[in-house]
Image 1 (spheres, rainbow, N blue to C red):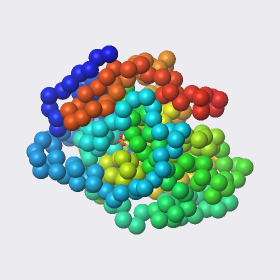
Image 2: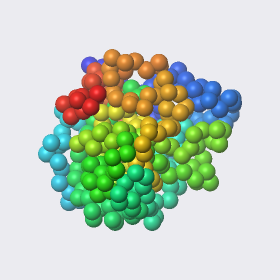
Image 3: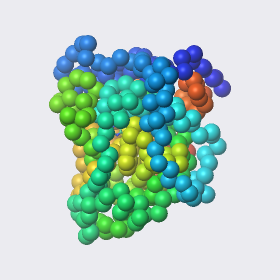
Image 4: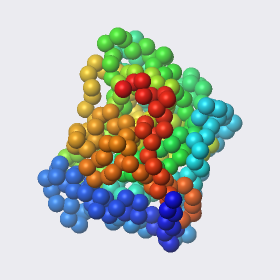
Length: 327
Ligand code: MTE
């Protein structure tokens, strides 16, 4: 077991976890898509949140209202790995609407979450626009400790608070024609600048999708909180998808629309490159991504400095007993 410690406690860059070459390759992919040079417009890799002011701002961004008391679902109360340090999870994020590096937590604070509405629509008997109070009242909240595995071969363990997606399915009653669901994230080009180049050429808004049977699986979860309190903006406030047997990109953040549809929907990364980012995207150590072997992962857990352990990646991220029968 290798443990690597980095000296800079507030300088977490994607290149410290994912190799720098891989980092730039993901950007090259975007560049190819948009047919443009990255030039000077790409954001710096290393975040600049080193001052005590930035530390305070980070802590403030994570200091959202408590959702406790909330019961931890005993079935998902632990995963034989420690929960990732909250400050690390809260400053090492992917949220391309706000930038192309990992240090977008401060930019994500521009996300306007007041009066949030989620439209549930499409092939359902009971279409409805929910506000957050409706959702919280209608669907009892529970805590679940889930493994989280990014396609970039890093992982965390995160304590989400939310409710199973199957409860929403029961409430809106999809018709027999509904075979897939599409999640759409918040997008407003005045607020979400994108990764800093050719915003208009990327397939915004961020969308993701599932087969209905996947959405109905016990594991599929809508999170409205994390670490005992309301979801901070960088984690995809106020509501996001959490699908622990799939790569992290399947979990759309800041969802504004849930649409039940008849055919497989186009999704953000799959539209950018369907070979690299499949629609199914189940965690699979035996299926390497063109740039990241998926056999092992860099498990990020202890703070305050970034550190990781190299661990083997498990099929379905360790959740085969729940989902293997779907495939
Ligand atoms: N959702 C939206 N709307 N935009 C994104 O860029 N990134 C995805 C996913 N959901 C993303 C998103 C990816 S690639 C990952 S790994 C996870 O969010 C990261 O979640 P976290 O920042 O809370 O760890």
